[in-house]
Length: 218
Image (cartoon, rainbow, N blue to C red; front, side, top):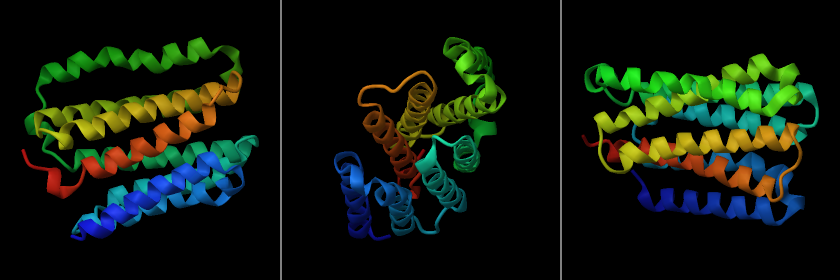
């Protein structure tokens, strides 16, 4: 639709992320600008815009704002709930972007079923530090894993960036949120904030770019 303006939006996103990581005093407002810039990119590059993608990014923007006070349990749970809604919206975007019923073979479903134990193993590894949030984080981890499974299933319908970018984004989401849980509950990681934010923003960008209508050629 407007590739020049879309590239500018991605450039501003990268600049915003650099400012967020390099200049601590800007983090309160730069963090809240990250997802709106991706929304602008999607609106400029997609005609018509995908409401599920816009909903996912809007939920992420709300989660970013709430997690500015992640040290407060109520704010943390609010941010977690916002991101959970965002992941559900991403799943809807993935499901409506390809004919999954026709393209996904039955063996794929059977092959990915064992992955369902991964959230349980992660919570067990984290130990009692997550006891108060165990139920919510188990559901959250299951949704993240299901999103990765849906993203990987695009390989049966698409080729190239349309197939691998959304899956790469879903894996980066798993990495980012796992590191966030470790950083929040088991002890602060060296360079944790930078790695978490970089993987999180890259995950969102990969999903937005990978689901561009222009790339969706079988």
